[in-house]
Image (cartoon, rainbow, N blue to C red; front, top):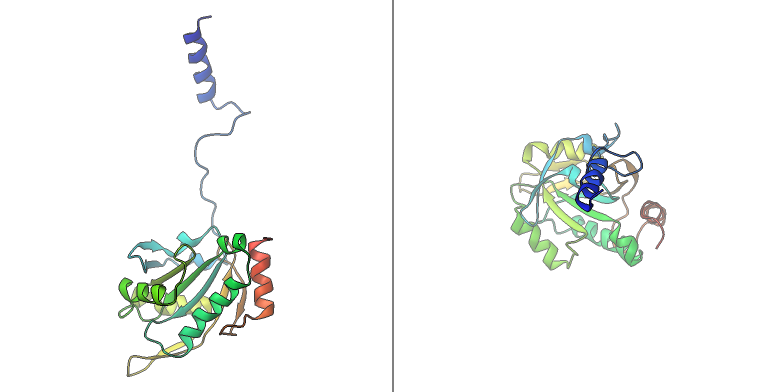
Length: 198
C-alpha cells in the first residue's frame, strides 16, 4: 500500500467519526436552567461600547448589581463592596469571577460615562463590566435581581442596593445588602465556594 493511499484511508477513517475519537464538531450549547436569570432576553451595551446579550456572561460565576454613574451616595459603596470581595480572593479565584454592574439610568450612562467610572475607580476591565440595558428593560432586570428603585423628579434614584452572586449558569447562589469596604463574611464564603480553591 502506497503512502498516499494510506493517508487517504486514514483521512476517511477520521472523517467517518471513529467512536474512539473526540468529534471536532462543536458541542451544542446546553439549555439554560429554568431558574437562570439569563432566561431574561437582555441586550447590554458595555463600557467598551460593545453590544452583547446578558447571557454572554454565562460560563463563570458573576457578582451582579445595579447602579447609576451620577450617584454620589450608595453606588460608590456598591463598587467598594465588589472591590472588597476581590481583595479577599487569591489571583486564580479572581480570574474565575466576573463582576457586572448594570445601570438603572441608561439614558445618561453611555459607554463614555461607564468607562469614566472604570477609569476613576481603577477597575480591572478583564473582570469588571459596566453596562446599560435599554430603558424599557431596566425594570425587568431589577425584578430578576430583586432590586427596587424609583426615579425621582430631579433625575436621581431611590434604590435598594445588593450584590447578587450567580453561578456559571446564572442561578442565584447568594446575595448581600452589606455595602462598603468590609465584605459580608457569609457572602464571601459563598463566593469562595463558587469560584473554587486558590
